Image (cartoon, rainbow over all chains, first blue to last red; front, top):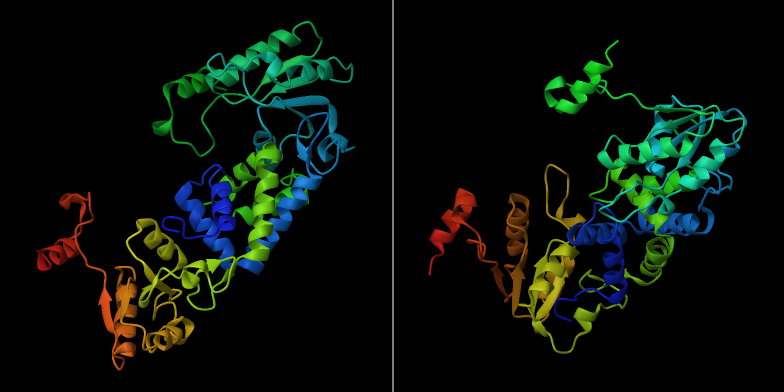
Length: 199
Length: 199
């Protein structure tokens, strides 16, 4: 009983919460306690929401976005441009693009970046499916909206190569000063890129 | 669809996760995505653990600890001393005491501290039940292990007053230098208390 004051149900809950990104053992204990205190407002609803997500949400067979329908509601949306596909690293990048509201085409979630260090090869990513989609005669442009990291840009290079035999235009997001960003806080590479692409 | 790329099930999950202490909107999105990616290892088990906790865990009728049995396993433990009750602010303080392994009596969770600012009065806390338990002739000592904050110490003063008509001994945790702590990092109040209680 010493060192294990809570029952196995509570300990298991804490252990699982501690596996969420952003929560450690200590904050997982606080979260578990908060849940137990707010049984009706939070514990019950979160339990139901997780069960709901587990049973209904799946990865879209076309673009790998998460949704309750397959193909996802973005792939199925009639008002969106089928001729432009925006390739992103991960679903959260797709969500960020959608929050910005500037893109009205379709998406393709690559599922990560190539990484010699972590042993992630092209066949571990969702690249072959992107090349196949790009081969559709309706598709005019592939936007490589991968993160501006070394691995992200390496992956963008690789995908550009793989698409070079196709008649599609391949573009990338512009580098530059973030809107609202101060020069003083930017690295030299960003300033150099912003200067080179000055308008 | 713009700004709301994910289905209502995912948005609801993110909203609920964002209500956990330590998670904001951004980290809740990351946590939701992590859960959806680790469906079998994390989403399913966490969903089951929450449902389990919601259906089985309850507050102990004696001490207000959380457990699957009522009275809780600490209150029901035959090997623990019924004559000493350690009053703590919250269940996480009880857990911290149990982890330390130094206390073999019973507990009483006060459920917070008195606070004029937040309008928390004695009747909002679990104090009357503590006074009633302290009136049991078996009880020899009440340890007030409330936090060393202004509100915690105000509450300890108030409880001491309420217990003054009873023949129980009322003690508090010693103030002093934390074990492993450096003097340089301690506030003046702690150093003064440690000096005054030097042995």
